[in-house]
Length: 172
Image 1 (cartoon, rainbow, N blue to C red):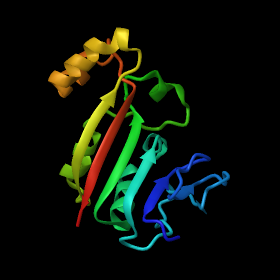
Image 2: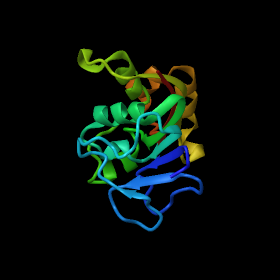
Image 3: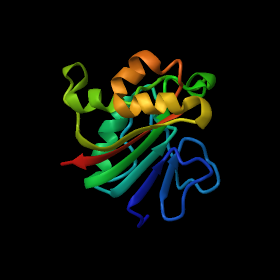
């Protein structure tokens, strides 16, 4: 495994040039491993420059362990790209395997130390939510653009978002 890019929960759609880890033995998966088992992931410290997890964290019981392992296997300044359904999306609630529903500021709690637990350091570089159905969702996008917390607190159920996109740099 010479790639310095990791696709966590890659499924059958791992991009070219990535190492893929998934709990199911899909074609193209390089390592079959349950990342939510609580066991250390099968990678050495400081292995990757880029890590992506697309629609993965909403399935995890142990999301804090997930971020600890991401931090451990990431090199300094590694880019971590995460996408997950926004809590107002029907996609968040429509899949019975989803155990968590996220707002766009979920990573803030992790960085600041959830319940005083010392967490690895990340710096958010991109935070966005996406909307589908432009005609009906543009007011939500506008409110979100003006004030993210106002949107999520008062308007997200009226103008539902689709996904959350977070990119963070690993600080070591």
